Length: 251
Image (tube, rainbow, N blue to C red; front, side, top):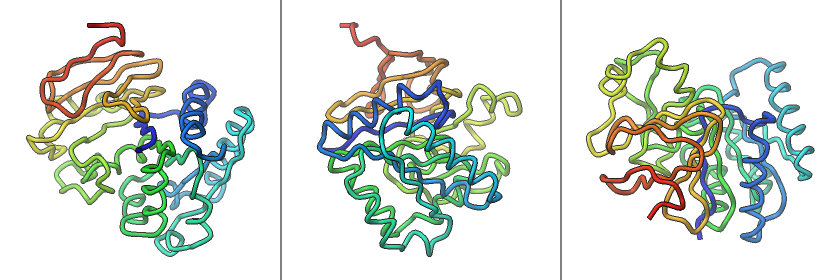
């Protein structure tokens, strides 16, 4: 029984995303997990102590608002990702949230480590797993280099091998044309490329086959499915090549 899985364009721990994050925690609790909100700030591991403290405090404030326990795991290096204390802290938590930063650093730290194994196992047994920005990008088989677009992608965590995510989408294409991105991001023909706007997410709930758009803006399907722009509440099946967005009430 896989838990819920969320890909977020931006906005982790912000008030605008509180109801969504609460729903992910509730999904995990329904599956027998403890009401614990685990913050995994690895993508920001190369930032300053001040910035890391900012993210820690922001996440705790959100968890306090939602009435659940928050656990901040300072997993900044591969050595940290082998720490049994952090592995144990992940076990049986309702929500594991990988926040934003450098997706390449995030993937390099977590690939083939006990921490990532614990996260994957907790998700497979009912916990919710969310990735925001860099955290969403690393769940694919490969992570594109946004700032060095001619450079080959680096390896990702491979949980969603055929899905590539462009976070902050409504800002990203202010500096790169959409047509160029499809080519330069090295997206294979058998993969799906989606753009997720800020303060917006797509989520696949535990026990469901489809994904649902949640948030203030849109999700953009760019490759691998018919081109579409989807809004809050619309559904999409990312497992088939002829999927179309639809409302839950559509027949």
